[in-house]
Length: 324
Image (cartoon, rainbow, N blue to C red; front, side, top):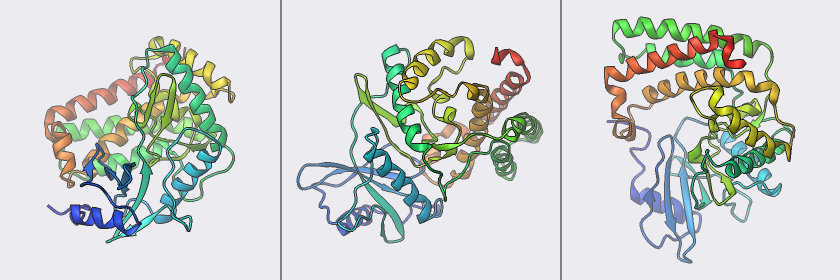
């Protein structure tokens, strides 16, 4: 099966690393990543590195470079992130055999515990530091979050596939159309956007005790600050996540005013992500890593469950109670 990484053999990986002056002490081994190919190795000085090969034709080089520049800017501001290594000429984006790649120092640690108030407080402070730098200027090449447009695009990609039965197609089209209509008023109000991490789930936060580092800025974009906060909250509604928000906002306020006016965006953003995530799985199915990692997506039961989940979001957005 043809896919973007068919030519990325172990020999190509080794040659790419050596092309920028690093000499692995052994064969690099793959880390858990799907959109890109990410491998860890130790060099001949026993330093640990992560090499990231960007998915071909996904981002332009200017878009990737903007990610790198943002990371270096955050690093200079002493925000805990992992910035890419730069060569003697200041270059952080490298090229070999048709692949764009970058090298990062390895970050070790564990994900935070979202039932630990001290961890939530620390995460609030970390995100506020990120956003304080993020609001200083705008991205020129990276995306700006647009919920209704993103839902429309995702819906079109899913419906263009042959994954759904006729009944599922009708139900999916109906519910995603409604979600697009329900998110449109929030977008139309004019979202206040800053440079954000964009994909701030637990897998992209590593640390020990109460010291955490943000990793993987591959999806950084212009978005409301709450985009980097809501994924840290429980999924079963405001009654559960109010106490979490209290700790996060208290830590956040140490560095920057908390965006209380954006709380109404949490459920629309959750809906947007659910639709986009499933479309992403469909888009990437020709990559062998995806059927291996997400085999259930190929089953009819997955789509019934996904449609039910979207229906729950539709009902959530239709009810004012979730804002109370």
